[in-house]
Image (tube, rainbow, N blue to C red; front, side, top):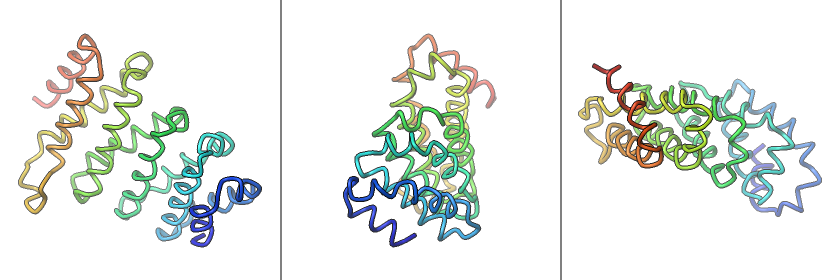
Length: 206
């Protein structure tokens, strides 16, 4: 898998296009492995595949790759979580790849962002993912799924109320990142939609 990942990173899309069908089952097997190191290699390989300039084509051909990447999340493997969400964040360059999986992506990133036991660097990665998601899909969620917007805003408000002394050794903390994310959503969503969503979220904290 390490060799495959390196080959995909350095060879052109045309060089490896012939082998996509053979690569997919290998990647799927490693994503479902019990070993975190193998899962991480598979995630890096998926990331390298999407950097070839044919991300949309590849992930349309293999629509189960993103769900498998999400299912590879192991709450005890913080490095793996960070690798997964760094990879998923790269996919915002081709939003059509992420669009069919938004519900799963939001659920996973919200749950991880709210996990106060996770290290700051992990939570910062998932919070940044949620912020980018708002930039890319905020207006679409206004029209199609305001329930998910509510979920994200409630997550941000909850984290913004955390004790900032939980991370004394960091220059930043999840509290500040959550406020930045909330500001981003407030600026993206029309006021008549944003106000009741934020009001509901804040009242739930009272």
